[in-house]
Length: 162
Image (cartoon, rainbow, N blue to C red; front, top):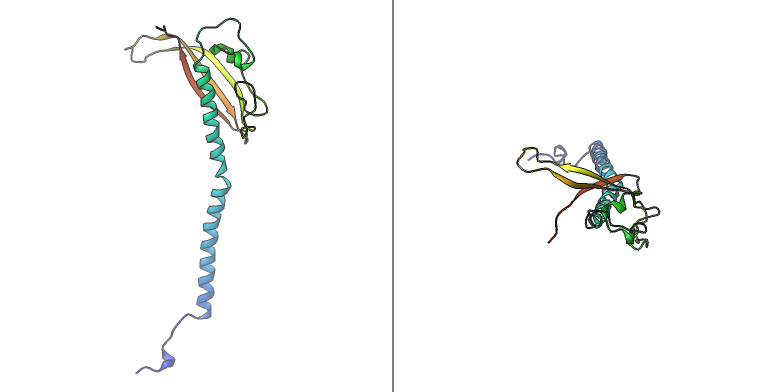
């Protein structure tokens, strides 16, 4: 039988202190990663909010007439052709507004900074399809609370209706 004094059970004080230091260092590293993640987690949310704002306005513009319609112009409720949004470029200040120019709650930090409409030719690079010469490229730019700018493009084609 072995004497009780030669059997070691447990840890020494030095081993416990080293264990605490190692675990503390690892925990600090993990907490720094969490802190950085939480700090920047709101940034993508602000950018994601700009997407539906730009998309909604772009849809509104693309539903308007391709050809200029006489007697239109500001306010936005009177816009009925694509070019009405471009001359002068439609923009908002003090937050997003609905078509009746009423502020939209929660979107006071977002603004339409620019709308451009340019006539373009859409051409098939393979030469299979004929070029579309009556097309307008619409670009909507939305700025967010952090000062970033988000742009979205769409095309309004002239087509013959039924």
